[in-house]
Image (cartoon, rainbow, N blue to C red; front, side, top):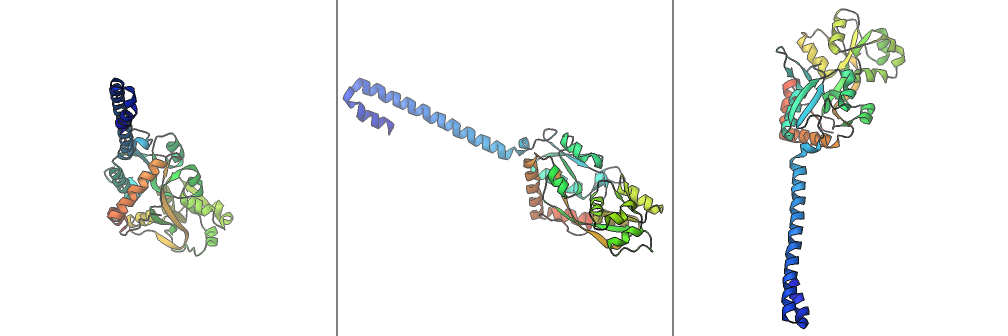
Length: 294
């Protein structure tokens, strides 16, 4: 079309100029077409790379490796078996998520009290170990969707311990893990001032359970999934009390600027739920499906 227009206009100028200009127009048109094609192809390739090679956008601490920080004493979420291998619900789910995302995965045990520092310093890419959603963590981290339904319960080894309301807690010595959701729920309880001096914080729930066995504390405040698992392996030596501290949903914590990784993990979890794989993992560890996505 371009050549034709110039041909009509250049008839006035004579054949030679008409022929020359016609060739120039063809050449310019060809160059323009090539430039546009190159831009189009480059754009498509960039889009494809952004979608197909998403791990480049995840800002992983170690390129290509998804490093998960966890407390390796928190059964059945993430803990050591008799052979010293890391096992648990979160281990299985995180492994399945990494496979879904096309990433290699590495699990790194950390001091739970130092989880924020480990995350910010990029020693780990996320905190994935039965971590509860709290307003403080919402401010400090980019959080995943809630993926597991849990409660904070009270357990004891003594028959004469009876807690029907939070006011009854003032009668007993209470133990829980430091910087845990159980401790936070205790501190937010309306009767906290009446029993706060009765609370002892431990490095791990295992330490609290040992102290309860020794009679130094009467009650532990603990995640239901952990307490019930521990109790099963202890031959039902503990019992759950009537009063509990409320629902507690688990989330995964990422760096505040890690929105792309958060989104990628959320998508992978949803895919595993839709395929039924997440339910199988839950039933393996809890005997029922308690996986959620909200």
